[in-house]
Image (tube, rainbow, N blue to C red; front, side):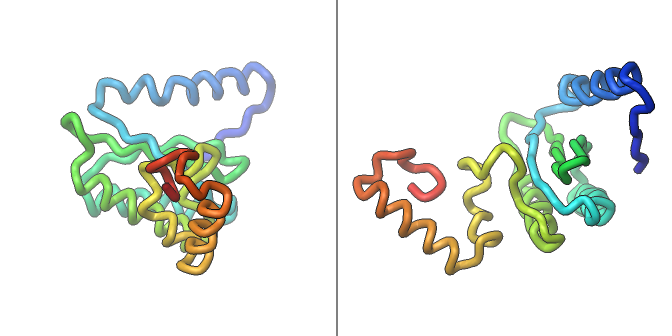
Amino acid sequence: GTVSVAADTAEGERLLAIRRAFHPALAGSGEVLIEDIAVPRSRMPEMFAAIESISQRYGIPIPTVAHAGDGNLHPNFVYEGEEAPAAVWEAAGDLFRTAVELGGTLTGEHGVGVLKRRWLADELGPDSYELQVKLKSVFDPLGILNPGKVFG
């Protein structure tokens, strides 16, 4: 792909308007699962290539928008129907694993949340994941803080 850098304030505003229009423009394409990953900026070309490969492998459009200055990408899985089909989740798993393999994270500024918790142990590793679970139980022995969430 190409990279655009604003030469002045007016062009910067135009580029921001394009960025802000991205998700509304997808509205007519089907349902959208918006994801959030981050990789080192030096690895972004590899991540974009991986996104294209995953899109082709699963036959799922994955238009992606980014705030590249911090390595954060928002791949959008476009699908038909009320619920994301299994192939979308399989493709998302490949996406998350690739981000981690490239030295990044399966989540950017939006956090793990309920949807990504099944992949969190892949990023943290078994020891760190178990430590997180134990820390949660120390501070929340009754399981009343965010019950049923990431470590609930």
